[in-house]
Amino acid sequence: METKDYMVKKPHVLVLKSAGTNCDEETRIAFELTGANAEIVYTQDLYTNKKKLERFHILIFPGGFSYGDDIAAGKVWATEIKHFFIDKLKQFIKEGKLILGICNGFQVLVKLGLLPALNGKIDQSVSLICNDSARYEDRWVYLKKCSTKTVFVNDLEGLLLIPVAHTEGKFITKDEEILKKLFKKDQVIFQYVDKNGKITGHPANPNGSVRNIAGICDETGRVLGMMPHPERAVLQTQYPDWRRNKIKSSMMGSTIIENAVNYIKTTLL
Image (cartoon, rainbow, N blue to C red):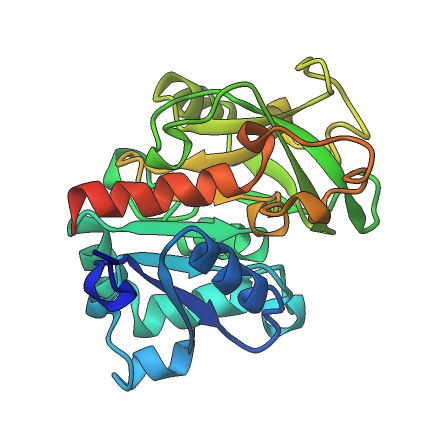
């Protein structure tokens, strides 16, 4: 008997859109390719309750240049959310749901204080600042998984190969103690490496991030932020040498997205 699509329970994914975001459409498609229902929603529609956050299982802060990166990348959007929506985000996390911030979305989460949220404290203790090169960096990078703390990397083995595209991606911490805690608590999820998995400098580390940090999670493991773009690496044809070499599926950005979708299917549906 053929299974009808409408009979299958699917995770509901909310891709937030604000002035200046420009990766929402490919993010929506990436999640739908993995078997989720994804919808692009304007932030203001959540503020006014035109759309209900409670309906969704996964919340995505996508890449782009929200509010033109005025003041600092992600700062205006983070401030807006902090004043209008932070309590609902806290409840969303308490309910066991997932949040992913990609590039500008990562910048928003750290300035909002949802990452790393050490000891559950929501305030800013890390940041993402201008690249050491003082220019926009747009290239494919290798990532090494440093920890299994987050559900987004459950099935990830070996290295990832996905693109970066940013000007303010250098990860820094308020002080050395914060940095030590991130590693001690296994909240550093990704580091930039070369093709052999070795920690090295530019161009493998595109921005000069301290300790090559490319992504971190909160203490629950259900909020993840990363500068590289997994949604731009879900199809073989998105890779620069796809005609010559078939990329291993385990190295693709789709692995991160699939883990998120599968987690919701097995825990909340």
